Length: 66
Length: 399
Ligand code: HEM
Ligand code: SF4
Image 1 (cartoon, helix red, strand yellow):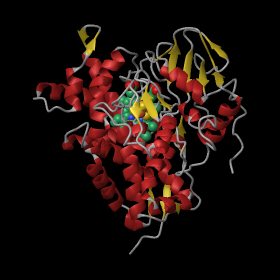
Image 2: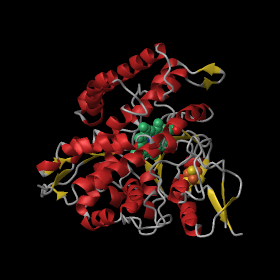
Image 3: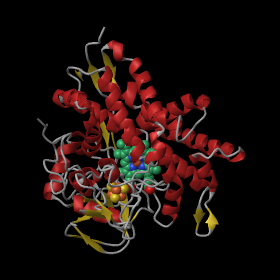
Image 4: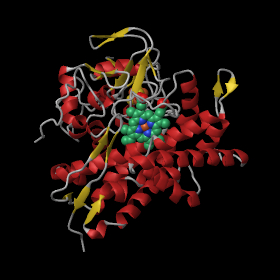
């Protein structure tokens, strides 16, 4: 599983890095550090990551298989 | 059990955000709007529409070119209303302010406030924990946000705090006639405070960043924009957080099973914070102006129309969140709009979350068992913002 944060939509709510801190991390302004690049999801983190995808108030995160 | 509506107003075609039926039957009216009225119409003042569904609110919130904030967040502002920045701005000027403000309110910087917040919360609890009763709004929730903010991210000299607190309190909760004069005093104080700081050596805090200002169309931002930015940073975070704290404690007073679950499982407090802001939202529906003709929720809007983004209703939309009326700290599908959507995403969201978490942790640690004072019920002031005015609690003090 991989996830991508759409940099044009992310406004720094921080739901992603709060729910799945092993996948997402904040930058100095509170946005997701990695934007517009696929982030690999470590094994075992899929469920928390899916929650983060749903929880993002901007709908900025998309998940892809493989 | 909810009471019957107190007015016969048809909230679909003749909506009024200031109507008592919304203030008193808040959840019922919001749920009705979400279910039956994607876009409500109002004839109040110059008239406006209210966007209620989660997907539509998200779409409009993210489209600042079509839904502009430049005419202010109030649907029917008084003649000489003072803007608050960056709330009442559109990009690019909005974003240049956000870029200098964001780092001070980002998670890393906010985390440094943790210990202070715990200390302030404990000191407030010391004031009433042994008494077996409190009025939670006046005794706790009205104080904590200011105590934390002005002793950390927005440092105000200790000696100035009592007067500032009193004026802010009068402005936010006092008799209507006293509010404007109190606001004028706060404005004067913040203006003089910024001026004083502009003559002192910089300390690297957010006040310096505001004094330095940003670029506005190739010119330095004017002085009043700096004062209006400080106004937003000060006022944006006080009564709002007060209401959410009161909402959480009210909910636990009336739902003992949830507070027991939280005491047994403290790692669920973060979820409780999200559910609190989802179901007890202080920012109900800020305004925008439509810039280009657009259809939303099946309704055609025209350039110049005023609309409100009903964040409070969107957070209760079953299309986004199953069983939305349930305050469920174990849900895995939390999504809420309480901190806004799009470029105006609440600057203080991370700080507000921290204060709410600390409030829940400290209150339940000190007073694990409590209930509403028999015969009492909270009252609200409710329009585009919502505030719980009082919350009387009783418990058996531990000896
Ligand atoms: C539970 C507490 C809070 C809630 C629910 C809340 C909610 C909101 C919402 C919904 C907005 C967006 C309004 C819009 O879309 O027009 C907003 C903006 C804002 N909030 Fe908060 N807020 C809270 C606490 C705070 C705190 C603690 C601060 C600062 C210390 C703060 C400062 C601001 C500022 C400056 C803005 C304007 C941001 C911009 O326009 O870019 N808020 N808030
Ligand atoms: S939750 Fe969404 S908006 Fe917030 S930081 Fe993560 S990706 Fe960005």
